[in-house]
Structures are given as structure tokens and as C-alpha cells.
Image (cartoon, rainbow, N blue to C red; front, side, top):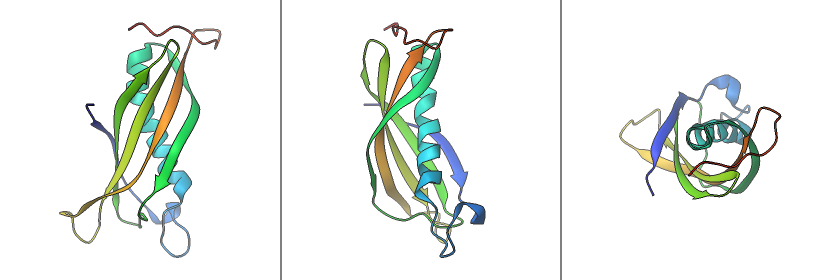
Length: 122
């Protein structure tokens, strides 16, 4: 399974709680965007997120960490595609330390002009 870095972004103070931990929703939103890139390439149509499964937060993300979201195609169905998204950070205090912080599976459905599911060309 080939994985590709889709997004790199620095976590900022506005994305954190008062203790400096980044909100999980901020991380998941970037993971969703990262998964949408290969899904859209495959679908060659509009797509919509229809499910998110098995999100597991292993370690926190802090203000100043660089979040990287990597995506790989796990399964291509008739109208949907499942993408594994893994998130890593480069810690702000040491750019040589890269840690996996979370992963999850994102399912996207291909849509036609009327926003109805459409077959993915394989």
C-alpha cells in the first residue's frame, strides 16, 4: 500500500485548548482533507465524506508541532473509496523526532452533477 504525504501544517495557538493541546477536531479535519485528495483523483468526480472509522489518538499534538497527514488507498468499491489516513508530527522542539499521533479510515462516495452516487471508473 503506497502512502503519500498530502498535508503539512503547523499547529497554532488558535487551534488549541488553554493547556496547549490541539483539538482533536482540528486534526480530524486535516485528515479528512488529506484523504479527499486521493479519493477525488480516483473518483474523477465530486466526492463527499460518508464515514470515518477507527480514529485512534495515540499521542497529543501541541502548539508549534508540524502535523503531516499521509494517505493511502485501502479499497475501491463501486461508488466509494476507503482511504487510510495516518497523522504524524515533527515536534517543535526537535525536528528530528517524528511521531505517529493518530490514524483512521475515511470513506468517500463519488457524486454526479445531481449529487447522486456514481460508479468509480477503475
